[in-house]
Image 1 (tube, rainbow, N blue to C red):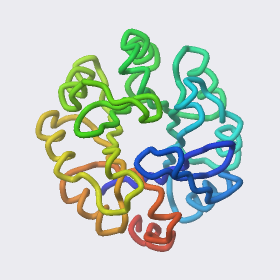
Image 2: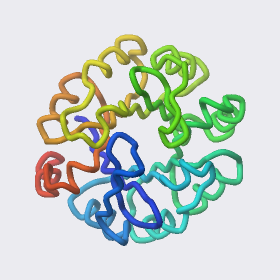
Image 3: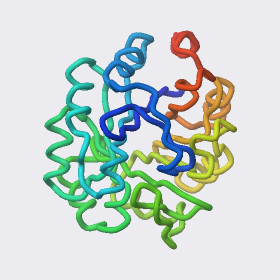
Length: 240
């Protein structure tokens, strides 16, 4: 069964969502992200995806106190990303309660550092963030698109030992118009033993069912919940 992972994106300590990674599209949904996390746990969620959007843009972890508050108020297994650029950032994330971290920009811009993290902490705690626009890797809070092709990028890191990849199609993110199922199938065909975590575009429970049917083992979603397209009751029923 596909694992459901709600997302909390943070700007200025608040729970927000963007559309297609555009910071000007910011919409605040809750002043206290820990309250949101507790509501997810209350309907049976076990995992949580937390992104420090301030950190992603500034290149350093900023909202670590929010992570700490979420971790202290829930027992959710948290993966954390955004602004992880050096060993100190990694220590902050783990010390504040993240069980896993997602390396996006760091993996693209400083691969030697990222590989060292992978060697040091193992592939259960280090996830690859492969965010893409037109199947090219995007970095820096999605403000910059590189020339690196998505699937060869994932293949290369899989050979280095990465087993879990979060892949977001930026054009779909926040649009609520369905995930990039065709793209995810292409990835799974190319790297069949990768644990692929789909992200972006989910607008209904049917979208999640579509990803499950395609063989995607895990899905991250956020705006669909905040906009009422998916209810907490539906999540609870899906899990049961």
